[in-house]
Length: 570
Image (cartoon, rainbow, N blue to C red; front, side):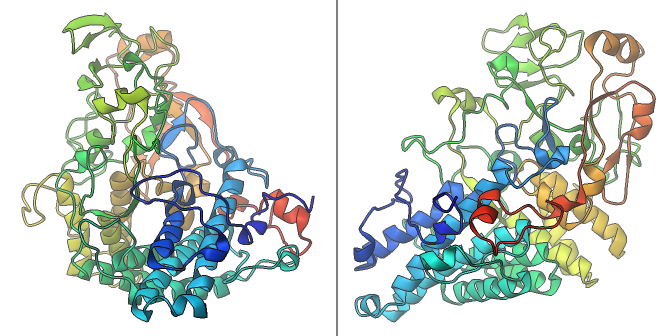
């Protein structure tokens, strides 16, 4: 077992060869002994820290990997949602392995940049910037590992073969201190911005934003608030004017994006294939869908939840909803990917827009049993360009954006009970953008005026869910809020099968929803009363277990190292 080279601890020793070349971040394969002999080689070596695999989302936005209650894949469950996570779960193993591969590269760079030979060839001012970049990446990778695993193996240098087989996990508190030190060095030495023509590299704002995220996840609200405020005060970022277009692959270099990893069709660095999110009429499978939980979380245009608003109509549930609802989920009866989308069981034919003709509606379960099980399909970021190039697409992989910085600042201040106008301004800026109006246009969107801590916390959590749906952030939100045991311990609901749906719902005039769920203190819908009527279907029950608040150390690490201790419950 000691020869298993895929061990993440051993990856602290190894610098794997480069796999793909992307012009925006060109990689290099020089001999390790010759690295860092000049600035070009330094930059090329640092480019390797921008690989997409080092920055994977918790939910990958394309297929079956739904960890949170925002999406699902038919009646399949990930181990997180089934409560069956083990130390051999491939997703967590890859998460651990990739984190340590990136850390290995960062450590090697840091050691080399601090060497006498490199210092003799590059000015100290430039070395500080390069060191800041490397230390940022090391901090960001350790932050992700701590978020998922708690205590982790920590090294800030190149590990010997002997140590690799014996090094144990370092207490999380010690690692947090080291992470903050790296982030702070990066903040002090990275530029506010690079020239417009330069390769997009990390900046001071990126370091501040990811420090704020890590601090928030660790419930260090004072640090989170300060870092987020400092990022805001840089005045480098603004909200994109149109929420709906922000996520399209045609949108590049938005001032809202604080940090992203580019993709390129030309260089074959893509997101895809994307068939699981494309509707069946358009040649896809529509197998990955938004949950009703997410759909019912969107507020009405009066700023109230659907169980409290007189504007909500369960027969027409897309009407009078926060605009992010229809920007994220395809509204019934509206154009989408060349067709009118309509899952109504009586809509056995549907309009094809290109020919203005009626065709068989394969997004209807009467015609296609594997059409969306709950009638909902994703819209966010999806447009007709997804049907081109073999359904391979090149949107930026957004790691963090300015809306998150604003809402992190607001959340940290709410948790500190330091609620002032700056908190409301941050939240209202995000909400007003959804309505495509200025925050000062207070008659054109539901302005947040609440100052009670508990009520404002609820609004903040709903705002985050509406704003960041399907961006890979929801899982860590429900984990850090300690509500995973509630939201992932109940069924995923959908429509009745077609015959029953017609007889019990449609023919009774109850389409689309046969009731209205209540919304709890965390902004989470409760469908239990609706389920009791027998008018909705339990597609599959989820079964979270609290041991999963921390992920298990991969089996391979335990097997080769007697000092590597496992997290409790695994």
